[in-house]
Image 1: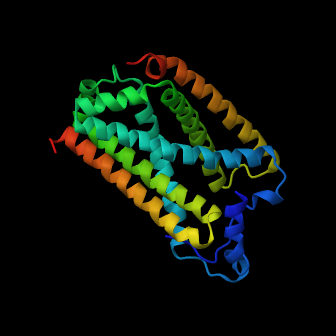
Image 2: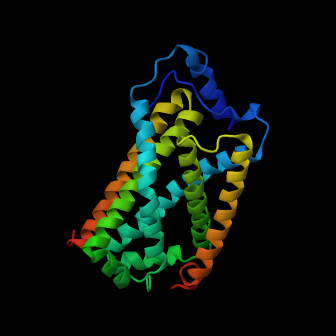
Length: 132
Length: 133
């Protein structure tokens, strides 16, 4: 599982902060955020399995304002990680490595993230703000 | 952050890049990361669509959704793939930013947490879809 004596990647201090650097960091941060959000899924499903009483408690907690804001943030992280993941897959295929291309694809990812987040928030308004 | 980077660099950077042979698990790690990512594409879309289109979020509605065998299967697939992908990604972050004596216990703890979450999800879906615990 663990690695030894292999090259470590980012020594953050030695790099000048560029647009693509920020996007790269965001991929990790959004991934970690989604990992944390998976705990909400676990809690929700376990509560559903344990029965209506446990479920009602968890749902009440999940419908608090801070929890709703966390869900909205998770939605943004979901779209960003998905679109930027596609960008990574393109790189794996050897596409779009040029400096200008990475900037361009980065802008597309940011645009798609904003658009998809707004569209899902608008179309699922009830889910995020109206229940229960 | 400085603290973790300091630890990471103190004992693991000096010898590396030129001398070390690649870890034989590295190739499968890379492949698994891509395979789980590809699996997450349709499963992620499916999960988000289903979740946001549930007619209500009360216990009866949610358990009725998961009681459907196909939905239970897809939800299980989504949960397990998500945690598999998460475990791989978290491992990489730990390798990059948690070094020294903290590295091994942190990696082990987070791997264990992913297993626990996967088991909890599988257990929940089993209870809801198949029978009572």
